[in-house]
Image (cartoon, rainbow, N blue to C red; front, side, top):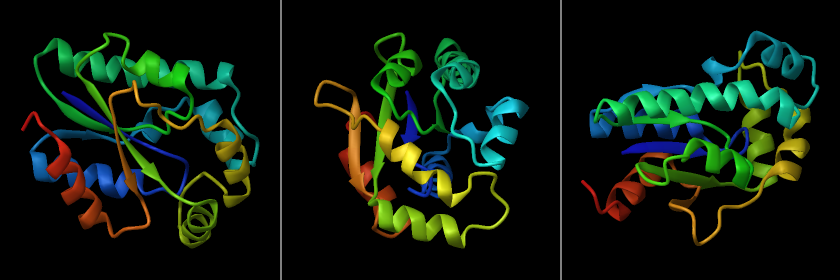
Amino acid sequence: MVLVVMGVAGSGKTTVGSLLARRLGRQFQEGDSLHPRSNVEKMRVGRSLTDEDRAPWLERVAGWIDERLDAGGSGVVTCSALKRSYRDLLNRRGSGVVFVFLDVSKELASERLRARQGHFMPAAMLDSQFADLERPGAREPVISVDASQPPESIVEQVLSLRLDR
């Protein structure tokens, strides 16, 4: 199984994802590192990505997931996965993927982004992330958690809800 830690910028994907991977002894992949350079540059100057911009990035993330599953392995990857169509692509097999949705308020995400150092995503782009967000539905393989909790608490909650350990 591959866990996809998802949510808007500032929800805590990297922190929670790396902690989950460490606790589970799984390989961790920071999804942002799979973005094409053109996407990073576009975001760095405050321009929102389009679906067309995101397509090659999502394909890279889906490829990483497929490699783990093809090898009979597991992993944890971060990806905003804002839209249902993106999540469908990441879970294109229909099994083997569980999304961990870090549900965060715009205010808290904005506060976290303003405090963050050395990341290409400016806080000014948060509105576009919330505009694109299609909250996961009941029919999706998702664990939703309140991302205002401390990261360790989120990890404990996710681990307690997973039935495949």
